[in-house]
Length: 230
Image 1: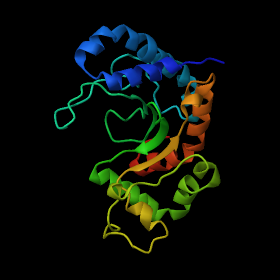
Image 2: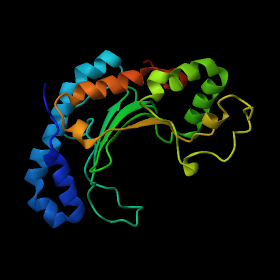
Image 3: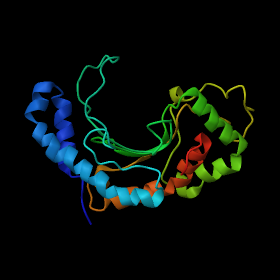
Image 4: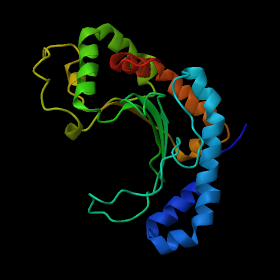
């Protein structure tokens, strides 16, 4: 079994957090490529067949730019924090329609002391959120099977902070609906914590595939809600 991601990735991210400035980055660019970018791209490439076994409509793209690996540079235009580089690694397995419309995706976040996997749609536009809420409202049994079953909830959580939910159920929906709290969600996502030990173990791609498989019905429900294939 292959170990794609090593402790060196997290050691680099820790050092970057302590030295988040361009001169240090320029001096350590080769280390970034060796310890972070290239192993992550190899992981993405090898994960492709496992992702295809879950759904052929999600993409594992190992290109260095424009693929599944998110860029390391922060967008500081509207942020008080002007540090130029991300101190985490983001890998997004987008839906094949994701470049054209808002669609669910699978996600992996690597950060020292804070690794997690995700699935769903983060802050979809108002019209897309409305479609998803309508699907939950109209098909409560289907939503229950997708988001409340034991196989799903043993790994994943849809719990969100108060500032990530609406204060009340949108007025077009009955506030007494059995999943009224879910109708208030701003993001239709689920997350699962992953330990750094597991991430750096051999066979992590198999472990992540198993996690994503258990979230398949959740992703399928969202795909159907927004009108894309799963």
